[in-house]
Amino acid sequence: MIDPITAIAGATAAFNALKKGIQVGKDLQDMGGQLSQWAGAMSDIDFVDKRNQKPSVFKILGGGVESEAMEIFAAKKKRDSMRAELKDFISVVYGPSHWEELLKIEAEIRVQKKENEYRRLELQQTIIEWSAGITLFFIFIGSLFGLVWIGTR
Image (cartoon, rainbow, N blue to C red):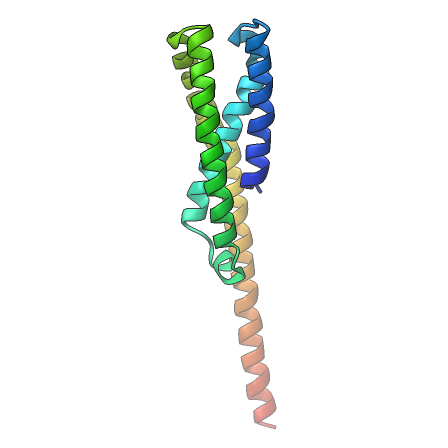
């Protein structure tokens, strides 16, 4: 599963690599790996935020919603700060058109991740939740029959 701490750590590493690359005069196209990593981490933060807005019953009962919400809040603030700094940096060094190019790349990566990785994670989570629910149902029914059987003896 994707968590906000891992996502922001990946984004920070890619962000620092992008800044260094820009400072030494690399072209944005030459930093495709870092751009892809950064945009993927930005997408991961958005995905975790959307997933946390509709938590599963098991997460609610486990009480992990509040702590994850705080982690997501901090990650979103860090994301916004990185995005603003990167926008300023790219706009000054390369011009505003390169920032628009970066936004297009980020949108493409977000679509790819949604079609592939996020769909797989959502399906996996659904299977786990249904399996746990069915297992609990059968345990309840078994216990009920056991109590009735013991009560009739």
